[in-house]
Amino acid sequence: MSALRGRWAQGLQPRMFCWVIKDRLAASERPGGFARNHRKIRRQEELIWLHQQGFTRIISILDSQHNLHAYDEAALAWEQVPLGRHDEMPERLRVIYETIARRLDDPSERVLLHQEEFGDRLVGVIAGYLLYTELIPEGPAAIMVAERLTGRELGATGREIVAATVDHGIVRGA
Image (tube, rainbow, N blue to C red; front, side, top):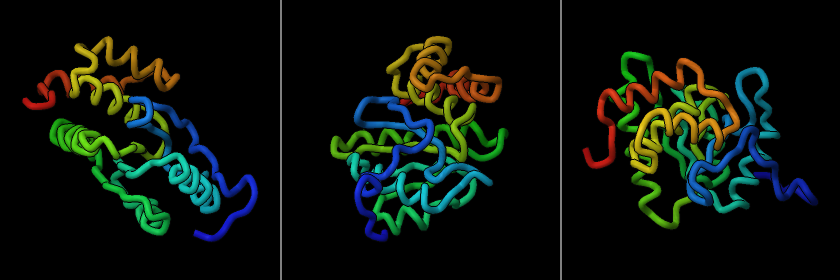
């Protein structure tokens, strides 16, 4: 990364950043923004901020490889675990949840989870992960908690993710 000075050296918090599990697991839109809104300099500033805040790993649930090279350049470890197509969802969710849990089992890890934009798919995965870990015991409660944490109402796609988690018994250790 190039040397930045002054307030820019601290970077910028990623858009829609929120804690899912305080000081351990956070979520945001893709650093730098999504699609046509993506800005390389903003991505760099957001990666600086993540580094300054002690994040040790980024988990991307994008189907594409956007940003992965930038994480290498920023010396941030990363994993890509694509959410995939609708028909792959139960199998992909299990892998995503297991990946997050495995990383959080290490107390030194601080993880950022992201999707292209901060929308239904990401919030649905957050709610599903809370169910997977049994931090929240049932679907409606997980939806409510995820909505409160993110400040976003969960729509049909996100609710499908929660339903797939429940219907397929995707629970840690199962």
